[in-house]
Image (cartoon, rainbow, N blue to C red; front, side, top):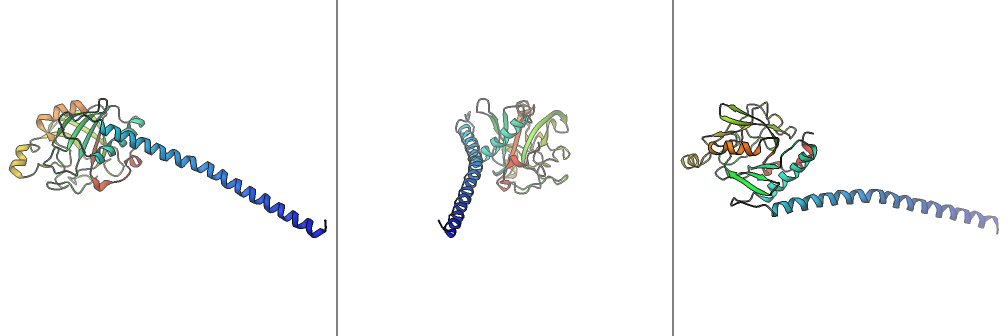
Length: 245
């Protein structure tokens, strides 16, 4: 073997080793990254499937079913809050502000039995819109409704009678709820007769006000750190990422 042949073979051997090393490293990196993506994808698929199964299993109890998109957003957030220990009850209250205020757009749902317990009217803030809710705020004295997730607080008697305090759980979206005195209470302007006389439901100062005849029943159902979710399609984002921990 002459000197040039030996040098050529040495260079070729080094090139093969380098190529094998690079290829092996690429396989290793792929092996490390691919399972993580698959795990995240599988987890999302499992949650979406679970939420869809719950919706399909809902017992209407002679009430109308809520919109599926609205319900699914609410349930995903509910699971997150339950996992964090913020929500202690299996009752989910859902408010769909994409609907006319003349429609019954509040649902109380027992997730233990997948049963709708109640469906009724609910008011939005007077500066949030007329018949339809379209602008929202977390600012004090705005007299607007705030969207997002809440946990129910203390029961008390105030100027509207029996009422229920709410703590907003979405940073920057509704976390001023307690300071703004946004509570669930009854109001005379939340009634079919008001709609008949004024062509729309009455409006609050930002509170989710309900019919006087149902307020005690609703508060009894949802008190004790249950989840209340106020939905509107203008706030389409991943709610779980903004929830207060």
